[in-house]
Length: 107
Length: 119
Image (cartoon, rainbow over all chains, first blue to last red; front, side, top):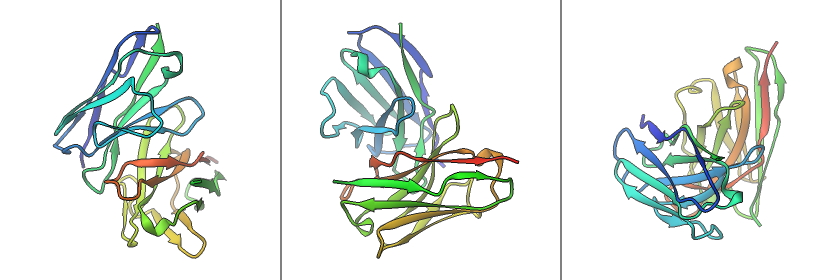
């Protein structure tokens, strides 16, 4: 099974900061990768799919890049509503897998 | 409007069984993949099971042989039959939909149903 590893596990940032989260797959997943945002007590929300395609309605300050084994989610200028936990997910194989999550906290 | 509504969660004793339901509306479950994802208290997301539009099913290694995903196409409902439950299965169980025509990313999620395994 493919394992997904995110780094860092948590980070502290301020409003307006540029934030980057990394996701590494244990083997190549092409661009079969999605990013989700989850706030406490809520279901996850799809942000980006196919590694770099922004889901409809998601602000353009979110972007995704990468292919193969290394991927990055970037928030260009952090806003208050972006404090949350972020997960990557591969769907290259039929055994879907998520990263362990990255919590973005207020500095 | 796409909606996914889970039901069937609750408190069950170790070794017991439970069947979750996910009622879908706004689309046909036969047109895409439907999946269950769970989240243990304070933990991350874990993919559990998936059923393809054509009916093929797959399960994570942690639940294989104990959980079974199925569907009722006439009622547009997906099920998760869970047997041999243990404390490790305690979690919120989310029903998700893979975007039709997409490659497998989940574009809609239900609000989840809580399963607690305890004596």
